[in-house]
Image (cartoon, rainbow, N blue to C red):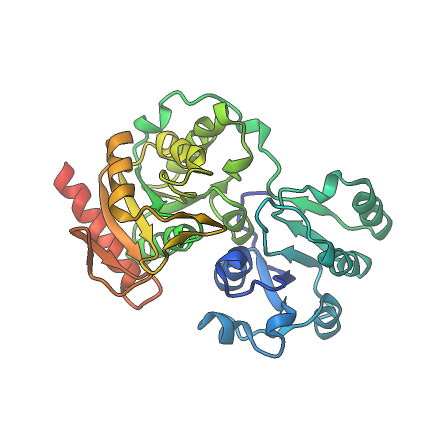
Length: 344
């Protein structure tokens, strides 16, 4: 996808079957709440049909949640994009979604997908899209133009770089990144942000790539190139983190972000009520203390604050706040700026 922010949001329907409002539906949730690329007219989730996005998420747009793509397009015939807002573990396309996606294509909608399975490389989907004159956009396609080995160039940028890290997947790193960015802009700071996952690319960022699709040797270099690009135009760069250093399945991506971004400060994101890893019930969440130790062992960047789903004002002797509550993002930003001032 083009990283530049559009001047007008496209009318869209979000497919979030069985997951809207849940961590598994984080892309759908993010596009509905924070999107600058798409004007969401309806969300498709038959398990929550009859409610609204605001009912489900507790805030955001008052758009309907409906049972099918056909229902959504009947109510909003000017929609021209279907956003696939759930990426199941493994990223495969559930068979039950094929009719919904086909309906959208036949009714003139481009399909924007964050699945690991690329629709644009499937001959049947490509044939149907060509027949109907629409596009298949796979936002996880590796950005080959950014494939390079890290060279340390992010260490030399003039901007202040802040990375969000996490104790697990789907704990709110992207949300925290966006809220910090907004708080900085509201405070009059010249800020930009870097997306590193499909949700961030779909909602809009100054630059981005889905890092978990970049070959391992080039992942840190890809992150570095994004940071250098955004830092050239902004005084602050907020970088979306992925997964956790203590996560046995995804720690490689997390480490690439930590090394590639060369952050001046880190904000750790935690769900204090989560005992087992998201999508990996066989493993416990190691927790804040273990993640702090891993970050300290692998980076010189200080952890300035903890972004928490709870209501704590301090976690592990660090300032803490909930970005979903009034004043939360501002408290985290103040903690970051205060820590950086002490480091000077």
